[in-house]
Length: 401
Ligand SMILES: [Zn+2]
Image: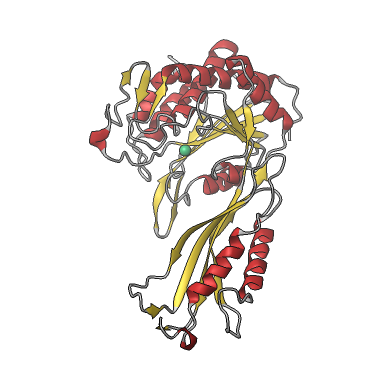
């Protein structure tokens, strides 16, 4: 039987499945077709929750005697946007000038296609890894992410699955393949602060309490001083005020309420709890300041609301995992990748609760854009890197955890 050793063929099959979240679009079925001949046992659990679409996911394991490597990713893709703006149709996998076009080409059907090709080549060449390989693939990464990776991990762990390390195949390279491995991610938390004032005539401010004055003090305290200067592995913690809303159409009316919304990306100086305490503290202190509210006797009357659940900061400390992947990149492209914690959150933040996790995939330049595409040469290179990693990681004398 022909094994799925060609990453371009694998990717073309996946791109031709229009799996815009939450649609499975045939993508998981296509994966199953590729994985079965390689000896994977494939399951496709569907998860549901009130108020969100049902999502089909895939967990495939090729069992062996030895350590257990997980490859994690998603087959769902973001919408195509203006389809007429695409040079080549978004679900056709057409090739032009050495590049394959299609939604998901780099984010991240391409990464999955390469990993499967790497396993297939290893099976063909050496009979497969001396250990277990799993693919944990969700159809809900680009959507609400409720019926995806979190539930899939719980479901698999509930059946007794344990992993020694994981690679997430998201596009981590900013410009060229081999630039960057992600070894952690900053935490993220959002909140909004609303100041309650007293409405009145703009010409008689002594009869009113302008909440915008109070909000300016509070926002100033959010932005200054800086939270930290960054750490060995992380950029400085940063807070962005993302919106200030008063909703007041009149110029001669002092409004009754004003709200500011903010997002914080925090490093390992903080936890979600300590950064929340810091924000409370800053706001309490600023609420008493009179700079913008001369003559007011009471502190600023404010409410702070935290939005959603925070994403926690993490840093992977498995040196062997990081060194093996870094070495595979160096051996394939001739230079060492940067080890980075930059960028937004990813599903690695959930996987880190089960095993050490790193992220490495294609070049991210065209992700989510019209004309998303990948160089065929990059598909070959990434397949080579993954194959080398599989050989070296399983080849090592592992303490199986
Ligand atoms: Zn992605």
